[in-house]
Structures are given as structure tokens and as C-alpha cells.
Image 1 (cartoon, rainbow, N blue to C red):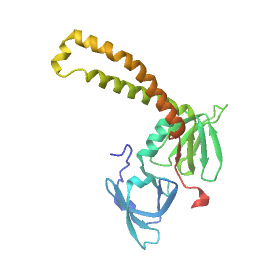
Image 2 (cartoon, helix red, strand yellow; image 1 turned 135 degrees about the vertical axis):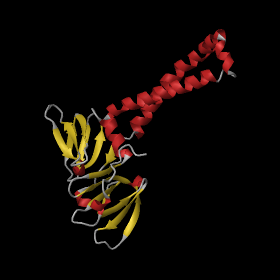
Image 3 (tube, helix red, strand yellow; image 1 turned 120 degrees about the vertical axis):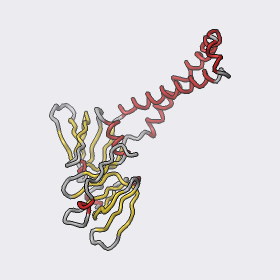
Image 4 (cartoon, rainbow, N blue to C red; image 1 turned 90 degrees about the vertical axis):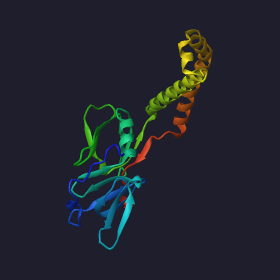
Length: 222
């Protein structure tokens, strides 16, 4: 189920009118037309001219909005990326190609006129930018904090599995001598596993981490 799926209130508003919808796809391309229906995993989309209709899976879509500034759908990918980026620094590239460095990113996505809030380095002035004007966001390496947490949790899971594998039956957990002895046996391995998994995940994240997300197409690409 999508983390943020804004259900259409009435489908009558989705009919071909003067209000168009823009379907923005993952990867930075978009289509203008009319969304005439929506299910749990797809939408029905009619071209601007009305010449053809197609079914588009939600998995391929970043977000959907109309020309009046109303947001209808936000993908899990966009929602989770913004959630992980809050409070961090990086660079915003606008749809016009402008580069905006920021030291702190905040959230302000609403149903109407969605936007992000950010602070530029050395300034306490609160800036806003519409979601539709953001081509992509790049987050700095402070995002590696998440990688360290993932490595720690992975190390915890491996150590717990090693410990539990020493017990063949539930009643063995009532043998406190065995519980204590097996813990002492696993402890040295855990001391090695924790730093290895944490460091390994941080190194992987440094080179392959997901710090960049294309949100809207560049104007010159439309």
C-alpha cells in the first residue's frame, strides 16, 4: 500500500475539462492529459487531444498533479527520499537548471501547491520551492548515518541468529547455565560482526548510496 496515496474525492473532476493533469514519471519525463480513473495499482490516462487512452502502472509514476496546483498522488520513492533527507544539506537543481545549495531541508508537501522548505548555508531565512520546479535533489554524505544504522541492525540480527542457533529446543532456554555459556561463546564473534557490517554498509553507501532523486523534468526536456 502506498505511504501517501491521496484518493480522488470525486471522479467527475477527472473528466476532460480545461484542467489538465500532468503525470510525472520516474526518471524525469511527463505527460499532459486527463486522468479518468484510478485503481490500487494503475491509472487510466487520456491524451490531451483525446485521441487515445492508456493504462499506466503507479510503479512507473513519481507524482501526479493538475494545472491548478492540486496534488493527487505521490510515489513511495519520493516520499521516503524526502523523509530520509529532512534536516540534511545538499543541492537542489531546478527545472530551469538553477543550482541551489542548501544546509537544511524541511518538508511542506500538501494537497495543494506542494513545496519543500530549505535554508541556504549561512542564512536563517526560510526559503520555499514548489515541487514542480525541482528537477532533482542531491543530498550530501551526512546521509551515511542511515547506512551506519543499517549496518548496526544487520550485525545485531546476525549475532542474534548465531546465538539462537545454539539452542535446539525451547526448554533449553530454561537452562541458565547453557544460556550464559552460549552467550559467552557468541560474544567474541559479535565483537567482530558489528564493526564489519557497520563499516561495510557505510562503504557501500558511500559509493552506491541513493543520494540523488530526479523529481520533475527539465523545462528544456519537455
